[in-house]
Image (cartoon, rainbow, N blue to C red):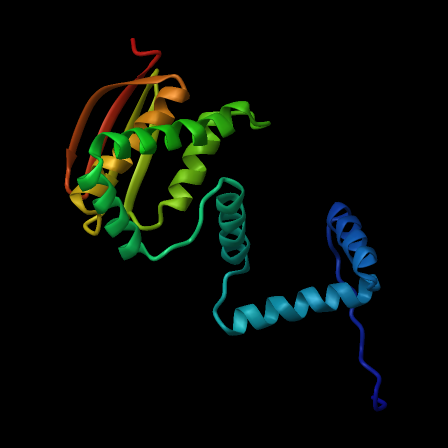
Length: 195
């Protein structure tokens, strides 16, 4: 092989993916050849360093959705401390604010262009609440069950976060039928339309 010459190999791919990649290459001012090689180099580097590209894209989408949803990143301990101060100094106002924040967030999904507002809300909230090791929202036969467990939640934060979830669920058409709350643990059952 002569210096500067690189052997080429033919790859076979789905036509729709090649067409989309070709458009991306054109937008970036690349040839399709250069774009394919860049993608393959990234895939090889990711594999060598133990990075799952699907997970990277998924996590990037979570951050994008969080930003678009009005969420910000902050220190967890500071967030809990601020929630504690608000709850201790103005309990009623704090509960109302958290409830209204849940209402506002759910309205974004209900008024948005998503096919299933509840499913979109559930997916994003499960992704955004990475500080809770156990976070499940299940919907079946006209009711929703919520279970959240986090040993790091303070008692005040647990109560405030429950208010947030209640506001969201009510906006999505569910009425709280039962709830069990203790420090770091939330269990809610809500019925469609409050029936």
